[in-house]
Image (tube, rainbow, N blue to C red; front, side, top):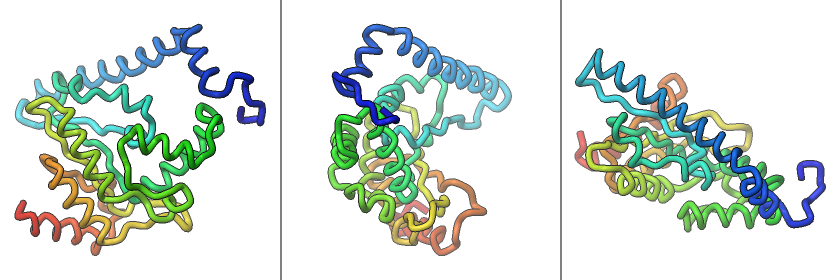
Length: 229
């Protein structure tokens, strides 16, 4: 399909046929995920032995917001035995360019039966983002605070009691020329949306050396207004 040759039965049907005829493809995918979880389990047990009171959690990759197939593999209930918290990535500014690139890629392969805009709308529907921007705007304008609110609420609802949800809120993660850049109101609205949706805490991401102080202050302003500090 990447060379312009579309399968006779279409891209998605051909993909599904591969899974039906060769179930070892899914077996390998499960093996990879179980290997990662085994690593988490081992790290958790070792860290617990060294520092019993220190909370231990994991970063959930941003593809969780874009790819329904990857999301299906991230069962928050299953994390409970070896996690105290989850840092679910909810980067709404660079999320626009990242989602646009994801749509471009899958529109030339798995979802080649659709136009890129149709693929985006399908992803929005499946991922439950009803109010996000069309494809010709998301790279420049990013995703909304409503996306952050919905992902936070979904994570809190999907996690078992005792497993904390600390969303990763983006501040100045680099994007390309002409792509969305973080503004103070983006941070302010995202932080407010996170706590209004029931988050137990936040992790300001990705690293301090990237962050502009006016954007960092906006996070503090939201926390103070919510009377969390």
